[in-house]
Image (cartoon, rainbow, N blue to C red; front, top):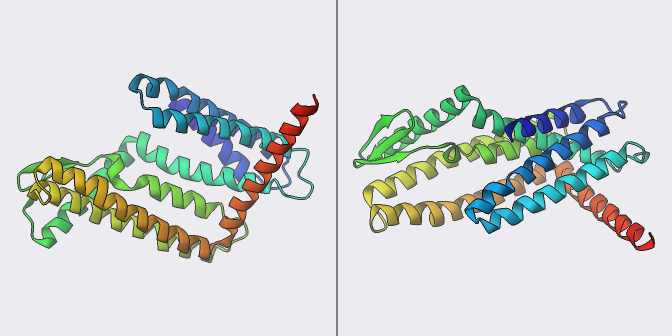
Length: 272
């Protein structure tokens, strides 16, 4: 499954960074989305085994959406005279950059270890600064008040970092200066807020702020910090979109073209 994802991202990278004069980039892009659709479909078995029906629905939706985008991208090779399909090249760039960043930290051992150990060390530093009893147990573990907390990849905010990096890279037409400003206002802030989130959750767990340690972890992780993260991401997204209106134009263009192609398919099937 990972090989399929690497192939998908590699094809999308080629498609999104080839010059506009290379019409074959749509072939690479469409092929990348096909492989991405295959990747999503291969996840279904695991979620069926777990009876995780929410993720089953999401994976089915991602599979269908990726396949539909592949179909539109292939069509663009001979139907892009007015440039309306260019938004799918921007989308391919966003998917490839974001996907490569996340997959690199998820699958390359040295990067995985580095980011987890860095978050662990910085979480310990912040908890110490607040004055709570904390020690480092292992490269990826800390203990507050004697209770161990393990830091995993999901605790590093790499998903949000990859998402914003991909979105910013897709802002076709934006100057590098504006892209850099959007990056600074999003990625470093997301990372710093995540260190606060990790430190807060570990402290709440170790010091039993909301009942038992388990109850404290559940409330802090799944309610307080999740709500805070959602609000923060919404505000940061708003600022990024204001700084890079090209991203909003891309999203609007993708919606418009997908709706147009969907209606065309419906009409075609009705008359066939």
